[in-house]
Length: 291
Length: 345
Image 1 (cartoon, each protein chain N blue to C red):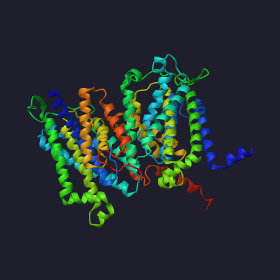
Image 2: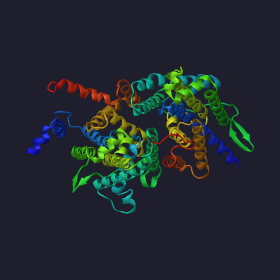
Image 3: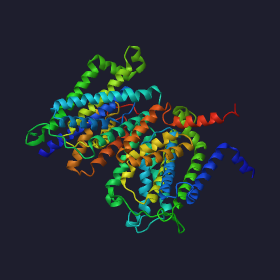
Image 4: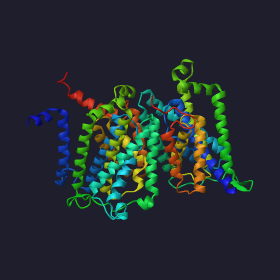
C-alpha cells in the first residue's frame, strides 16, 4: 500500500508535467492549427531561468513568477517575430514545423552554452521536505507540483470560458475570419495563446525540477511522452491533453515500479502507436482523418 | 547514333552527363593535385554527400511527390544500417547465432527490402492520417526504432555500438575505405546515379503520376481512379527502400554504428536537406545534401556552438525566403534562366 501511494504520487507528478506540455500543444494547435515542437525546450529553459533566480537568492515564489513571466514573453515573441512572419508569407505547414524544430535546437544549445552541459541540482523548496500520507512518505514538492498544476488547469479553464478575452480566444480558434469580423484581434489572441503555452511549460518545468535534475536535455527527455499524452487524449482537445498526459505518467511509473523499468519506454511508445493505428482521434475524438 | 543524338539534344540530359563526368573526373584531378590535394577526408565527405543524396531522394518520393510528411526517416536509415551489419558481421546477428554471413552488398539489399516492408507496414495506419498526425506517427516510429536498437543489447550491443563492420568487396575486389582511397567513392557514385535514374523513371511512370495526383488533390485523385491507400503504401515502401539502402552504405563506409546516429535530429536533417534543395525534382536532393553536409562539416570547427549556429542558420533561411527554403534554389535557377533566356523571348 505504501508503495502504491508513492508510485501513484510519482505518476501524478510526471503526468502533471506532461499535462502542462500537452496543454500547450493542444492550445496552440486549436488556436493556430500548427504543431509546436518548441514546447519541451521552453519547459527546460523556464526551469533554468528559475534555477538561476534561486541562485541569485530570490525566494521560490518570486523566482517562479519571474520565470513564468519571462517564458510568457518568450512564447509571445516566438509567435510575433517568427511564426507570424511565416504565416503572413503563406509558407507551407512544413516550414512552420521546421521553424519550431529550429527554435528548439537553438533553445537547447543556448541553454547548454549558458548553463554548461552538466545536470544542475535544483534546491529543495521546503526545508523539511517529507510528509506522510497514511503511512507512506511523499515529498512536499510532489504535492506542490500536483496542486499547482491542478490550480493552473482550473484557472485556465475559468479564463477560457468565463472571461471576455478567453471567449475571444476560443472564437478565433473556431473561425478566424468570422472572429475578426466581430472585432476580435485574431493576431493578438494567437500571440497570447503562444504566451500562455510558454508560461504553462515553464510552470511544469519549475515544478518538476526538484524531482528531476535540471539539464539541457530535460526537454528532450520529456518531449516524446508529452506528445504521446496529447495524442492519446485527442490532439487539440484541452481536456484530452490533461487526461492523456496523466494516463501516460501513471502508466510509465506503474510499469517501472511493478514490471520493469527497462520496458517502460516500450510500453509508452507501444500504447501511443496502438492508439495511432486504431484510434488516432484519441479518447476525446479529435479531428485527424483526411477529408 | 540517332538515339545518342536524341539524348544529348535535351538540355537536361546534357547537364546530367556533364555533372556525372565532372564527378568521375574529381578523383583524377585530386590524384594530380589539381584540387583538394588528395586527402581522404574529401573522399569521405563526397561519399557522405552521395549517401545523403540517396536518402533524401527517397524522402523526396514521400514528401515531394506524394505530399506526405515524414519526420521519422532516420528510422529506416537505422533499419538499413543495423540490418545490413547484423546480416554481414561475423560476430553479431546472423554470424553470431547461425554462423553464416551474407556478403555486404547482398546484406545491404536485404536490409533495404526489410526497410521497405516495414515502411509499407507503417503506411497502413499512416495512409489515413492528416499532416500533423502523420508527422507524430513517424516521430513515434523513429523513437521506437531507436529504443529497439538501444535496448536489445544482446542483438545490437546497445549504446556501445558495433565496431569492425565488414567492408564491401565484389569478387575479391575490395571497396575498403581505409586501404583504397576512391573505390568506395565510385561505388557510391554508381549507386547514386542508379537510384536517381530509377527515381526519375518511377516518377514519370503511371505510379509517379498517381503520387503527384495524391499530392495535388486527394479527392480528385480518388475520383480519377487512383487507389489512395495502396499508392501511399507504395510510396512509403519505395522511400523506405531508398533510405534503407543509404543506411547500409553508410554503415559499411563508416565501419561503426551506434544508436546515436539515428536520433530524431537525423530525420530533421534529411527534411532540411530536402527543403533546402527543393522537393519534387531530381536535382533538389543532390543540391540539398551537398550544401547541408558541407555546412555541417564546416561548422565542426565551432565545436559547442555548432548546433546553435546550425539552428539559427535554418531559422534565418526559412524566415527570409518567401517560399521557404526551396525558394532560394528557385531564385537562383530563375536568375540563370533569365540571364540566358534571350533566345526564347
